[in-house]
Image (cartoon, rainbow, N blue to C red; front, top):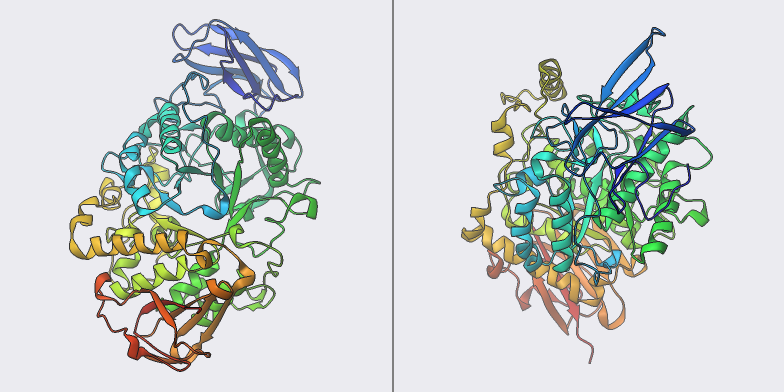
Length: 622
């Protein structure tokens, strides 16, 4: 099947004129038709080769319901007729169990022609979950909060997965229709409108997509073709078939998905979930093929389309250019920075945190991005990782919180309930002073205390009960008397809503203003805005639980003193600081702190660091 990069080549499409062009991959079917929901008429489709079926018709209009009808042999070698929703459906108006609804992607009148995007190095990312970010919990209501984000200094929002999932409540990683925008969030038109508004206001949009598995409830992909393989196991069931027999149609399906978000929804970047779980030992890894197709699209549209990956491997092959035998991903999340930061801040060293020694590991992440780049990992019981040699700071995304690190705790506690107010400010400063792309999780900027719990709304009682039991088993080692929150309960979902009223309260408002200050510094100071790993040096003071971080060079050089201990610390930092200038002190009264830093804190080559603080200073050059 030859693809036109500038149009969607799968599912139902209205490419101008009065007709719908329909394309379906169903390699095992002997007959295929499209069923019009209005009167149950069946329109026969024609084979075009390699498992694809095609029809062009004026009988299907935008807004019409439809299904596909397949005649094929079942596992008992008997002929059966199946009626199934479109695997490339754009809109499941009645949920995963309903008919597909035809949607015209080209009908929306975009007004963002002047938008050319922003450089990856200028991304300041705000991760949000549509259902809990606002009281209304839909895409349209996100638009009402964009001015807040702009005033904060955010340059890109990252939306957790929108692919159609069962029910109305879910993190989004149980999606079963990868092309369909969740109906309870407003569907595809609402997403187009949101992206258009973001671009008009100068905000980039990142969308979280899941190519490593399909959710269990309402998943009918396997009835259309060999979408899954038994060759590999994943934590979520059968692996997607990217390299086994019949994989060409599967690969095309996900490539088309990536292209659609960029081309038809004007998304600026995709964040690909857990790409370490993509099993592909073919001659061209699926990520590399997606990258090459996205580059073709960029050349055709004149816009940059970015690919950011979540990766639990310290392997820069994923982010190296394709001409250097890499997969060409533009950036990756590095959880190790988060783990080292949390241990530095007092997180218990259990589970994967056991591999990190606090400030020593954090200083290494500042210097090398990866903490483990070939050393022995006790948690993994093997040597792990490789050096991130030659990779720019803008290829790494760091954070003190995200949906996983909060929501995968049994009680979904945010940092604001786990550490002190002073430590919160220090952790924020640690992220924004890094030579990497910073990411915030919704509500972090005002020290939100509501939890972000794991929640679902599976409609099948057996699956719902299995999720409950699985969640309890996951945290069975906790013996503190707390009851594991029920993922299926609406109350669990409602508890996870961000509380915007807190912004009006003094301490929360102080934190908000502190974040604004940090982001302004990040954008305006040359040492912070230029993500130069070569001009970054971190030194750990292990016994004092402190880090001295140097950013920039010559007249733009700054020093960041991070004290994770609960006592003031006398640090030898070397050199004359007679002509010093204070840029930021998290312990200042202005930021709700004790106000302990003064000129007396600095002597020849010495600095007295306040407890749980970050102080940023620069030397004046005369």
